[in-house]
Length: 133
Image (tube, rainbow, N blue to C red):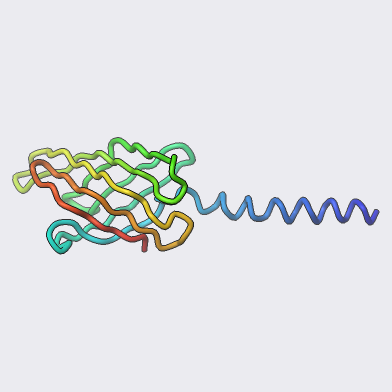
């Protein structure tokens, strides 16, 4: 009987951390804020969702939202992932414009992660930095 209790206790101790980490999801999941442009004067709000297989999201929710259409993530470096997001937004006239976000996800193991790189929207190209809220 005592041996069964030990096996049960060990099983529970091993299962609980796995269940807790499974609830968190993907390191990009969540809400991010920051900016792009010279001195990050253009504000950014990114909302990412993880369905267990794919990352989806929207940038600057509202009438001028940018919908993420494609996500490529290079997981080869466990400390800093290379991330490329492609989406579509609208310019000032309402015309569709391609948006590409090419960056690096840093501090992967921490709650407050940093995602930085290059923001390209139409002909505009600048640096961006966002942190997880």
